[in-house]
Image (tube, rainbow, N blue to C red):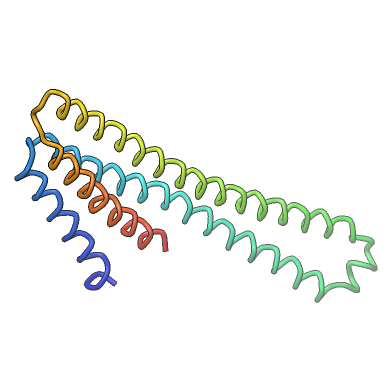
Length: 168
């Protein structure tokens, strides 16, 4: 996984940043590296929260399974002591905990998708506003602008692939 997916993606990101550093002023390259660090940090942080939710889902599933197995093995004593409502309440609480953790995991995944899109789109707007301003002042050419559009795609697609690898 590291040698065939992650290492080539990181190499592509570094090469793109170096090309931008050679072609343009230093702040473009710093912007790309800053975006990379923010994006990967965001993905790692939100995925850790999601993993915690999945661990809680597993423990809630185990609790529900234990309650069901215990109830099936002691069904006669439950009926004899009229404890059906107690067992139903235990199962309802366990099911509620399970559903709460599933919803929390879904919220974290939705937050991850929204945050990723917001970060990339915000960086896109800032980056190209800077490029268009430079183009209007004549400090860069149309060819350089087209090249930057290309390198933007060349930079953001590997970042998204790297995040997808981490998500899995």
